[in-house]
Length: 159
Image 1 (cartoon, rainbow, N blue to C red):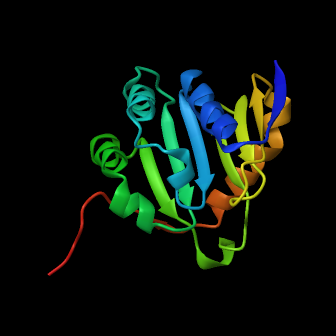
Image 2: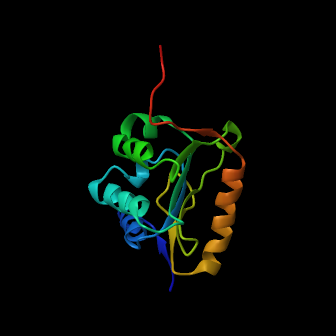
């Protein structure tokens, strides 16, 4: 279908919802801390829940964050989904050597993607229904995931 350039935060926010509304069975996210994605908004929680609860055998939600605090402290719905749908949902805190990376990725079914070029700017590219255009970003996510990291848990351990 093609791609379009996103230049404002409002357009970026709309593009996130547009990508989620495509009802993917697999979603990969690489982000600074998830705050700009507003995954706690009701329509987004519903979309993530629908993805994870779908009858598809290949459903999966993989999230890699460079900073874990926002997800752990300010994302109770996401942490609840982690409790309910592990191992279909994984959230990984990336290793420190990836902190310098500035891009943010959302890739749905390796056919749709939202790529923010720098974590501090809204400038992004939305790709819809184009596996060829998404391939380099899917490869990049695979490389980030391959670097390892610490899985987040929905339970807090302590003494």
